Image (cartoon, chains in turn green, brown, orange, cyan):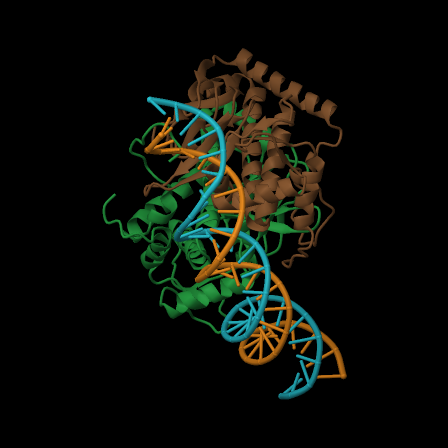
Length: 258
Length: 258
DNA sequence: CGCTACGTTGATAGGGCTCAAGTAGCGTGG
DNA sequence: CCACGCTACTTGAGCCCTATCAACGTAGCG
């Protein structure tokens, strides 16, 4: 469309298409990779382990940046705050993910990182990391890969927000979540939402009512299933179908050929 | 750290509120900082200079990642592509900005970087950078700062897309652009848009018609002024007023979500 | 001069936000 | 134990903003 050149064959964003077709094995492989990464970090660096509980801050906006963090267990949200009190959830973090990169730019965090449930987070002195990284470039590259992933994920969510209608946006959110869980060796049936509708909506650029309606529709269509009356726990029994739903929303054109 | 607490006083994202009140001096200072950063990079590393013209690719999605890039002059867009041919502009780059971080995650780029006008870009071997960075941690920290800025900017645009109505989104876009120009020592009156309405809309998550209407309204309200009939060049004679316009659009939202 | 790309403007429809009412779970205190 | 308040979730009605479709104006260029 805009380019003067025509396109070369290209790989695309993994998120949507990554649907867990081979189920277990591939996820287990990813899970082992994550475990291996964590081990390498723990071996190469002196990390400080902390147990956090729901609502605990890992770091806070405005505080000086001295450490980076790696999630060992649990789930975390990263929240960007503006002076007038509005908040925007800009990321979710799971086992193996790094946190705190937002402090690199100005030596000061501009986000909060908050635990969504009980978990363990490791903190790593940035200075120590720089030194260790100079002895061991592979370690530095490891961190760079994590940053690259963060940038890629941010872009994916930007695209999702820009292009998907509400229902598909929620479905995409659930897909990504299921993938994240599966990649950590967790089951995707019987998962508990650790975020309120308001938080999900905030994250997706929707109101809480729209999220609620979208989930009701997905449930009516059999793509998800609520297991409790409070509607916080749900079955994601068919993630590929969810992914399909997202894909169909993207390209209303049939297009069996590319 | 790790308080369960409710909010402490906090500094906020700079982007919107950064309006150029002291005009010249501060911008010139930033401009000198950028020049100094470029000089440090050129001194510490062997960079390969390349002149590009409008439409030239700096790198392409799918290609192996080997180099990072730094903009010396010109303006670039970073475009994320998906298999079905849809494109999404995910970033704009100016003098002093780094490009190519999207390749770090998988050793393969997943975006195109395209020149919007004539410019000069430097390429830096990533391996060489890792080695140089191990001798000179400050150099590594320099790159990390750039990555931190990229992450912060991505979040800002996510927030903008999520929360601002169309007119304000366009106004915010113009503000950010004016700031970027001013910080590079360029004048903000009589600037030439190097992007079509379609590109701007794509970047902002709007249709080209909506962008066109928004700009017409901004012009009617005296916030911007077109200088040619083709409407590609415009006066940004009062950037603070534009920033105010954005802020007002934000205010009436009291926000729920603790 | 026609062709193409780009931009503007109008009419219309629809998706999501807003406002509002109602339900369910849960902890607290009488 | 139940009433009460609180928070979270759902659902409905109406409206507004933006996408869509369409027509037209303009500039650049072979």
